[in-house]
Structures are given as structure tokens and as C-alpha cells.
Image 1 (cartoon, rainbow, N blue to C red):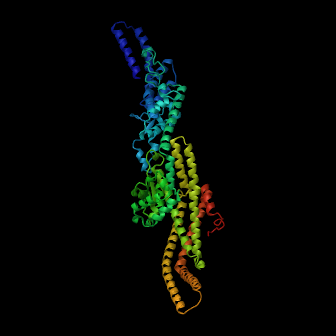
Image 2 (image 1 turned 90 degrees about the horizontal axis):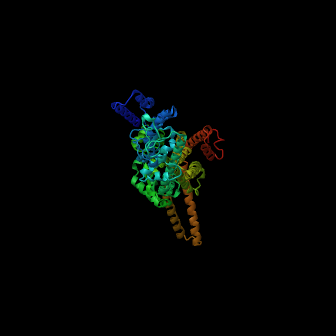
Image 3 (image 1 turned 90 degrees about the vertical axis):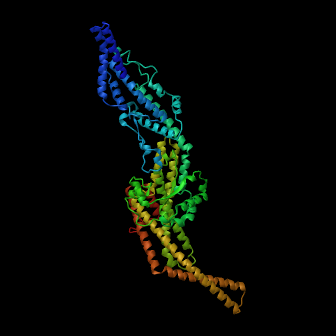
Length: 631
């Protein structure tokens, strides 16, 4: 518009010069002024219609005026204005889709930047929305010729921006794209010479198809060309970022490394670590030494197959300040409970745990992730992994404790205590079977199939957004199918596991007490054996020496077994022990029946196939289905 107004002022100066030369007549003035009046009328109408708009909104209004037609002169003027007005907009577009660089000092471009969101946030803030909200679209500033490819424009710049923040040079993107098939953006912007307004305002308005600095041509062919150009830039940016993240930064290898640790993929690491750290983790949370646990974890890694992992140095350990249920409440409330104890308390409603938490209940792993892998494995993703790990780790610990109880029970096999210990055996067997089914379901019916599905999807992914989406789907599926998103079932399952671990600890204390009694008893039996040998030797009893020793050993063994059986039977039939077993059995049966009923109800009402699979595994023989009131 400034060019047209300047040409109008030139016309006024020319008329004034002719007036001063006394060569200007009324007919001449009317002849020269008539075309300019029409142009100024068009400018007046256009300026009133666009008002105070700017950027893409201004281009859309000018484009609407250009498409409305009118006479040839008015069309030339509006097209000329559109071409000139689109130059800065298209220059911002070029910088964005070729360099990932947003230069928009007046907030006129279709892409908006939220400067308060930094890439560092994805590594420590659970609630950050860096990838979703760092760059967003301004709908009113999207030029209508870019509407079909607006999302690709946004994503292209985001991808190249990530590459730039990795310190990579993206200037070659423009050269590579310009050298590919099809016109480049500079070709679409027009020629080199500035087309004037058709020889002046008075000479008929704007001329030429495009301005000298280029501009937007209002044709369908031009719109198709812009779309093709953006698509080419999008494919280039996507392939560049995927190469950087997946190939150069070995995304799949890092994810497999995290699977080894957080999803307990390698059993020897878990066994080695628990053999070393179980006694420490059994203490209250305040008594656990974090440096000691870290050193034991490093030792367990070095002594297992995980020592071959090239990313093992990124593994660390951490301790939550709150229970599993509080952790989940914080996640559901969308709060950053993982960043500090104070935030955790706030996110959990400010409630303190009713009981002192043990180290085994709050222990969790952590993992150091660097940019740009942190786009996929963000703090949110790591927190989800930690939730899954805490659930699996505690379930495996309960199973381990029940297996230790089974080993203790095996030491009683030679004793004649079957009748007295039958209820203990049966309860331990049912608890262990339940926990083994739960662990097997989570490890081999949920995690492994979902992980293989994710890897197949990642190999076929063509964009970074697909990578992030597939990884998030994996975590959400595991959380859902491991019952971590169902508060009702999770609380009951946690109570069942707590009952199991309390039973195992009680059995451990019982056997430790009776182990001490057995030592004293064996000493008494040994003394009795020496006394009997002295009597036999002094009395001159005959018979072969080997036969006498064999009979003596057999008699001593029988005596020991009888003594141990009598002692153990007396302990097992004590009123306190019988009542304790009855309480554990009653609580376990009650919780298990409630769990199965709710599980079947959820599977039936919500049509969740994973719940139906778990019901089938736990009720494989129809015991709960055929027992209306529970066991």
C-alpha cells in the first residue's frame, strides 16, 4: 500500500508541476486523476475491511477481497497488495520449515512459541507439556492457502528445532529440498524484478504476477505447490530427526536397557540384588542407607548379565517418600509428586502414611536420560516405569518370601507333623500359587506381548510423534492391564500381598525360634549318644562294631526325629499359633474372594479382555465360580 500511495503522491507532484507551468487544464487533470481515484477507492474499501488485523489474518482478508473479483483494475490492485503483504509471512514460513527457527517479533505468524517451556523441563517435571505446547498453532493467523498443511508446517519446524537444539546444522535442509524434485519456496515467491503498479497509480494499478521480493499467488496451482513443498520439508525433517534419535542415539537399545531394569526382564539381576540388599531393605525407610543400596545395586549389576549393557551407568536408585497408593493418587491428580516430598504430600492430599513404610515398599529405580532421547523417555515416562517397577518389585518380593517359607516347610518333611502343620502348608501353597499366577500374568501375558508389539510399531514409525505415541501406549497398556489404573482392585491386591508377606515373616520368626531349640536338642541327643556308647563299651556288649555303630546311628536319628516331631507338634498345636493361622487364613480368603468377585464384575461390565484373562488364570479350575460364598 505504501508503494501505491507513493505513486499517488508522484501523480500529485506531476499535476502540480504542470499547474505551475500553466499547462494544466481541467480536462487534463480529470484524465490523469480518474484512474487514481478508482485505485484510491479500492484502497479505502480494503483498509476499512481489514481494520487492525495483521499477519495471517490480514492475508486472509486481502485474499478474500482479491477473490471477490471486480473490474480488472481493482483485481490488479488487490493482487498486488496480497503479493507484497505476504512477503514477510512467507519469509517466516521459509525460516520455520527449512531451519526450525521462529522469528516472529510481532506475533503475526501461524506458529506460536511458549518461551516459558524449556527442553530441560522434560527431564524433571512430570506435568510438563513441552512437546505439546512449546510450539502451537494460532488458528486466526493461518493463511488459508496453508490450512490443508497447517499441522505439517507446525510439525516440520518442531522437528528441525529439535535438531538445531542438538547442535546440528540444518542450513543444508533448504539446499537439499531445493535440489529435489519440484519448485522450491523461492521459486514460488516470484521473480527478481519489482513490478510497479502498472506504470504508476494513474497508469492502471498493480502489474506483474508477483512483487520483487515475492509473494503469494492466488491460484489453485500455487496452493497445491505450497502443499507439496511443505510435505517435502516435512518428510525431510522427520527422517532427519528419526535418524538422530533412533539411529545415532540408539533409542531402541536404550528402551531395552530400561526394560531390563524397570520391568525386571533379567531375573539374575533381581536375585543378585535381593540376596545382597534384602536385609537392608527390610528396615524402616528412615533407617535404610541410600549410599549402601546404591553400591549394592552397582555390585548386583556387575555380577549379572546386565554388566553387558552399555547404558548401565545411567541406572540409579531412588526412594519414594510415600506409599504406592499415594503415588498413584498424585498421578491421577496430574501433579508433580515425583519432584519433591513436599509436592508428594500435597498431591496425595496432605495425608501421611498410617504405618511406617519399609525400604522394600519405597525402593525404586531411576534412569538418566539426555536430550533428545528425553523427548521419548521424559520424566512422565520414567515415573510410569517407576510405578510399574514398584508394583512388580513388591510382588516379586512377596513371591520370594513365600518361596523362603516353602523351603522352611521342606525341613519339616521328615517330621511326623503333617496333621498339625497341614493348615500352614495349605495356606502357604494357596498364597504362593496366587502370587505366582499374578507375577506370571504381569510378566508374560502383559509386559512381553505389549513390548514386542511396541518394538514392531517403532520399526515402522515414520515420525517422531508416532514414536512418542507408541511408547506412551505401551506404558498405558501395562499400567492398565497390571491393575495400576484400577484403584479398587489395586487396593485389594495390595492388601492380599500384605497379608502374604506378614504370614511369611511370621513363619520365618517361628522357624528361627524353633531352630534355636533344635540346636539345644541336638546337643542333648549327642550327649545321650555318648553316654549310651560308654555304657555299651563298659558292659562288654558283643557284636560286630560296625553293626553296633549303624544301629546306634539309626536309633539316634529316630530319637532325634521323634524329639523334633514332638516339639514341633507341641508348638504347632499351641492355641496362639492355631489362632494366628486361622486369622491369616480368614483374612486371605475374605480378601481373595472379594478380589475375584470384583475382578469378574469389572471384566463383565467393562468388557476388558485382560481382566477376563486374569480371571481365567486365577480361577482355572472353577473353584471360585462354583463356590458362591467364597472358600
